[in-house]
Image (cartoon, rainbow, N blue to C red; front, top):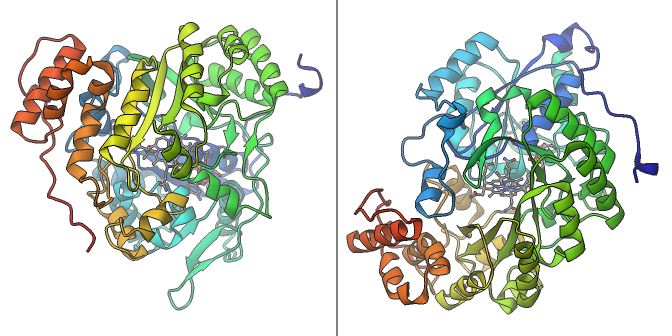
Length: 544
Ligand code: B12
């Protein structure tokens, strides 16, 4: 089956250093992740580290994931809301840090003396690293910020005086060129994808250069992460779960996602959506098994089946014969067919994540730009049920103009399928997406100026489980209440719905009802207030 696809395995070891300047040049990445969250090793900094090391530079990383946050962690909130299975990090002797994060960062700066500090950020994670970047800048170290947020909101991070440079779009070519010029003390203001302040403080954005050939990249370098970071829970089991970047980008048009806009900004330059060749993908997985002791593979692809049928056949055969570790993937419901799932079983599939997102066909097609029939969603998921594959169903609520009834359409559709776990996120608009523009035009953003939205993104309070939208048809409290009871509405009998309605309320009585129902759902003895619920937020201001 390999046939024409076979190619020699790529070598990952760093090439001989380009010269003394390169091997002396030290990059310190900062990865501001939600603290103590059960999240993956990220693709972005891992590939950037690999290309920089290959080019002969030194790389280290400061990662915020294993520090205990002040309040509840992202995962603790998800556990409260029944959207995550209980897991025990202690089983694999994973240590959560109790030391002071900023102090540890200062110590690392003293010890490592980096020539460049480079943060990889999303809109929600940028606030977590501002203090650290300010520390680096105060010591005269240039600070660079890259990732999806600066790609679409380049002026955002540049509002902070301690940020010197930003990267729009892909970072591989840009970072190697930048470090090379910095190491040789050459000007770097012409490097594609770079943003910087011009002579009058104005933001200068260089044009985007071509995208990388994903088959020619070195394998992702996870060695910059601490050993405890390789563990993650999957359906309650903590394992060494290693992600493999399989596709970059996505061919679909979902209005809430940045992917369609990545295709737009790269239009006329390169195709943003790319898939790795099966042979190369399998070689990379071999490397992860040998180097990082992978016990479980996480295919990083927005839609796993967005690839030619032949590539899937080749990959399935290679994976089944050479790897056969349990694995996770994500795909759209309408891509699920009997034949494909039989092949996934042959490969050893363990879990599948399916984006249902919304239960009302018309709303889903018109507002979310996801056209598919509910029948197809149900039939797709029933194939997974027949094959006994645990499924996580993703849902989002709180879209512009979405009413309580529309949210119930999503609850009903979830009730008609079988799921092992359910994610119910509150929608937040990300700048660069089509739906962000809709929210803006309707006056649902906190204020109708880009500046204000940036300020909110920069605020320490930018929430991971709240919505920033102010909408006339539903309040923020109602959305938060529906989010925390979503799983109960789906999984408990309808006769419980009046009590679940009470459990939506973010007051003492509501919290008590929620605690009882949650305990019942989990089969635990009921105990009042065995966990705390965040206090109800102030009533949102409606647009005038
Ligand atoms: C896989 C994925 C996840 C995974 C892994 C996350 C991770 N950090 O890798 C999981 C499921 C854990 C996840 C979680 C979340 N995600 Co997510 N995720 C994605 C997805 C589908 C692919 C990301 C990816 O791996 N791309 C491939 C890598 C190689 O690309 P990249 O990360 O963009 O990096 C390249 C460039 O950006 C740049 N770059 C990146 N960092 C840096 C740093 C420097 C210094 C430089 C120079 C360049 C640079 O160079 C890299 C190589 O070219 C994207 C969609 C997308 N296309 O971006 C959403 C996306 C990034 N996620 C998003 C969101 C909102 C989240 C969550 C906040 C959701 C939530 N509330 O739970 C969390 C945040 C978790 C976190 N701390 O990161 C949004 C972000 C929107 C925004 N504008 O900020 C996206 C864009 C989806 C969307 N709605 O449009 N996510």
